[in-house]
Length: 264
Image (cartoon, rainbow, N blue to C red; front, side, top):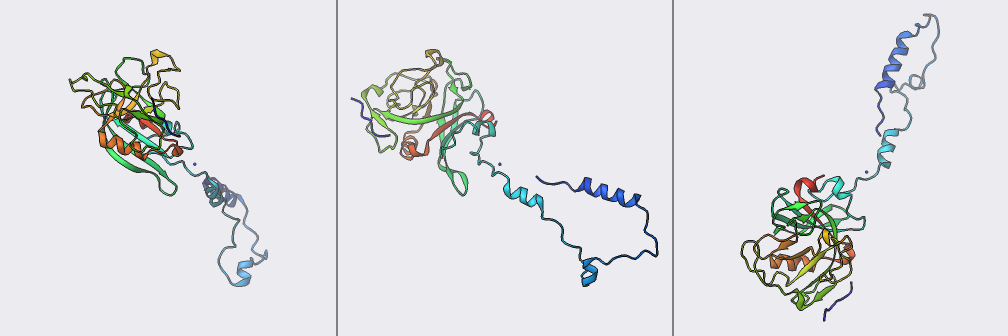
């Protein structure tokens, strides 16, 4: 039986200065006998100019919106897909669109310092053919994007995860991978990526809201020494560290894809 536990105006003075200069040039000089009134500054003996109006530019700067901090390596378009409440982001970055190895880092949002590394970087693997923004079943590419992560499980007992964890013998796997490496133990611990799945269910759940042709069952699992079908794989200890660090209250997400795509 599965075991589950709770779940950013400056004012330009150039035009104004030019206008004032032109006006001065066009005005006739006052008669020599015409008396002039002393300015408050000359009356007081102070040669400094009278103070001007308050600095509007300074006020504008003070009220300007604070820029939203961005995750390292992540551009504005990708960052825009990260939910406002998210304070944990697991970033998996491939060198190119066709690479099947990657680097993975867990970041957390610090109120004072912005996004900082919390764990990693770790070596990672992804699908045999690399990455795609339009994943389909069997294309041997990992989906590019920002996806929530909130459910975990595995063949082995819960190591102390805060995510809901399902221990089930159905996570057992055998056979060999693309390089002839044994797959046994790959699903000892897994974290479900919310790509074409129903959140809040065991990673074993096979319902595909976008349809079976869009693939599914995309997990973060134990590295078996070769590329994956579509998943992300980490070395065993790195996966356990990630699993223990993820906090449902932080609304964690995975941000995954080649560097060029994530930087948009």
